[in-house]
Length: 347
Image 1 (tube, rainbow, N blue to C red):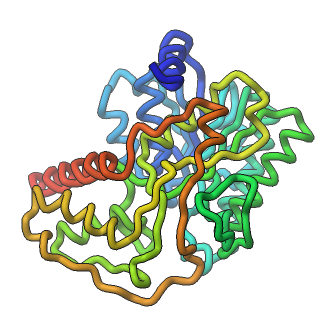
Image 2 (image 1 turned 180 degrees about the vertical axis):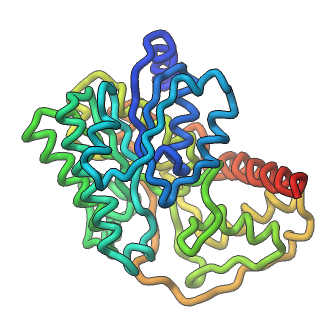
């Protein structure tokens, strides 16, 4: 039995009250799904700028009885009053709300700062005032910037390569300062490339995996920026959910006041990633088997390689990935295929 299994059993027996910001997003909705499954009470906040109401409907349809354990705050965390309302009477804050995407931040750095820094500062102040037990927030592997070392180790970062990376590094500094100044318990989680069910395939800033799945199903060629040798540590959503729950509930306060990588200590280049997605889809859609990617120039702000050292999070929380790239991709593709079939049946 793993540490995570033990924690889940404890939560079932002693439910807590959680705040999940960005609850209608890809990661936020997965956290909501797991917490409700464990019998927890959840407050969710979302402005629906990038979050989708369909994600909430999907989660709440799994077990209709769990609707009574969920309260939605429909608001923008750039408003301090929204943050204070959401933090009222909760035990743990799980802060996922953000305006993601490196290219988006390069195009509009002010919006990235407002949503990723100003809103986070409001959440920290509200959590302090509400005296929550612990705040866990989402950082990003983008903070490693141009540091060449692999795997990435938490105390070795380089120069940021995008406004998005700057916002996440600023959040980390704020988190540490608020713990030191106000006696709060705060944990940062540096996500590597998260993928899985409910990840949005649409729009100019969609993540690569859902975008490629949708393109291949439609018979379109996928676009690789660069020669395809860039590599990432792709981390399935259930691993991220595990990391957040462990980070919130591990009782030792010594594990707080710092940041942890959340990944699998693996590395997959984009050519391999395309092949993996295509091979999984070809079992259901034979027409995709012959589709090859097309290449375009590299994008500004993209790092060459990324791989998470996970020794620190293993030692502190007992984190152990349950899904690596192959099994996570099989589940992800199966989910998207099922959604595609449902859409065809409705049309």
